[in-house]
Image 1 (cartoon, helix red, strand yellow):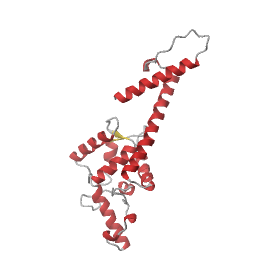
Image 2 (cartoon, one colour; image 1 turned 180 degrees about the vertical axis):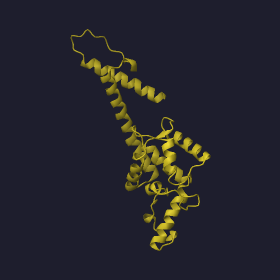
Image 3 (cartoon, helix red, strand yellow; image 1 turned 180 degrees about the horizontal axis):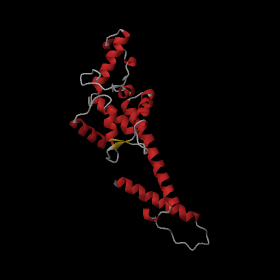
Image 4 (cartoon, rainbow, N blue to C red; image 1 turned 30 degrees about the horizontal axis):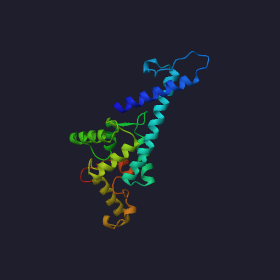
Length: 205
């Protein structure tokens, strides 16, 4: 992406500056121009990648804080979602469409139009318009899908609430908000994604 290319240029310029600073005064050195990726040696490449990871992690922290604020999740819910996310991600810490489809399959099988909706939602949430999510975007995805009543999330959430009512002898309307697994504006909860598949009417398959 354009943003990624600009960050690469900045990092390469920083690398050239650091190399210049380590040169001895006896070196008849002209000011170093930023190297291209092909000109990097292995140590420089490792340094560059470390910088990339540091920048990415810093952005993730800021974006996660913003996502938690928007979704109004509790700390317990965030950690629950984090455990689910970490169990599905690849080595780069990203979850692609295939993984998301498989994860949402714990609730109900996604139809073709729903898979396209998921693809569009993921691309819209990705800062780079990619078809993958990192944890901050995962939080927002679950929240938005629940608010828009997508992928059978709400039907499954209501089924869980009804089961809680049956177990406690209460009707769903008498269950206190704090007793519900989805006690935020979004009825989706970490436990919801880890339960068995539900039909559109909320019955377990």
